[in-house]
Image (cartoon, rainbow, N blue to C red; front, side, top):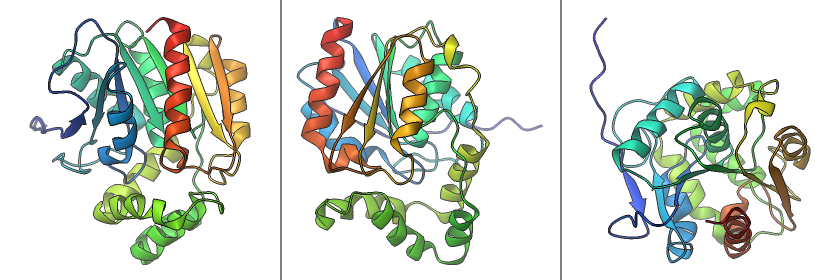
Length: 256
């Protein structure tokens, strides 16, 4: 079997070099997304901690192909964390990124120091209609994701960057991301996560309703949950300042 070549991972950072005396938040985007989704968090929290958002393989500025298993994405992120020598890594993921963060906390408890799980769950079954839409009308899927991914109260102009990121991702890679989500299930393993965890849910999230986050909070021993009103699945883009305040409060709580 031929070994796959090392892929280049693109990323954005809030500072030119990482301060070894500060914790480092590693932001992980969702299915079909890109690092730029986290720009407001990367910039807004850079004075407090090191902030880095990466493009998963095949997304954004990263080359290579996507993965069909969350554990494979988790290995990529773990390698990236080691490569940049991130100090006190805190993994923060939205949706699929949140599943990767969970997998990292389970697989790399000595590497990762804390986790932030946004609009995600321990199990993410994907409706067959999602796969059909991706295969038959990718632009229609992007438009549908924009409608259902945000609160009806959110200014549609805020959604354009999110839609552009998804449209720029190859349909096959987005499909594989959703396959990875569909196969993910750590419902019986959450009690093994022995790290501080922040869970953020949103009132109008129709893709991963608040009950998903409630389950995480009830089953991860050292977890706290914050529920944000008037926002949907992409709450970090819809309510960026509020999300940043919640993350800062969590960092205060854990001494980072």
